[in-house]
Length: 180
Image (cartoon, rainbow, N blue to C red; front, top):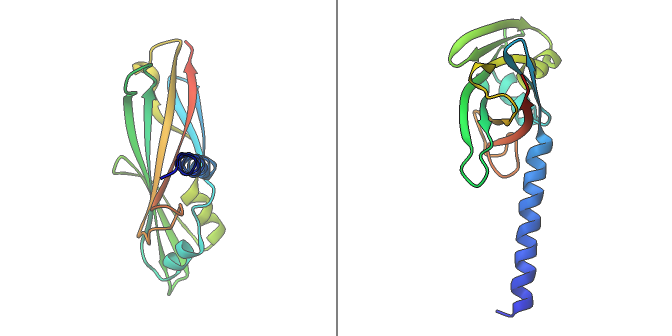
């Protein structure tokens, strides 16, 4: 294979990889905030409520969005360390007879909140948008260190392209410095 062809293929591969990373980063917006000995995490899955998701919900099929939230410490020249992990899951079931959606949020497998609504807009908001969730304690953090929150989102049932064109999930991360 000619050298110029190899270089061209390598550039194309790098461009596709960079594009895939940018698509994932744009799909999940994350804002960590430290307040009152807690790490509060605000995040939104921008393109998660697709036509396929709406159709699955309207059919009465239980649909779950699962967000795995990792609090990580950046370690130079080594593998980053996971300090803590929390799993946030939102499930929605639509009752076709009563025309009501029941949305249930769990944190690490324990029921956290439940709401019944008629509004598909409210369901979209509850399934894809979270504001200042107190997910982690600052007791385990060292002052003046840089940390980051990494979130991976998946949907069930999955048709392979629910949230992201190259698979059944998306992820993103946001850095913050813990100052005491």
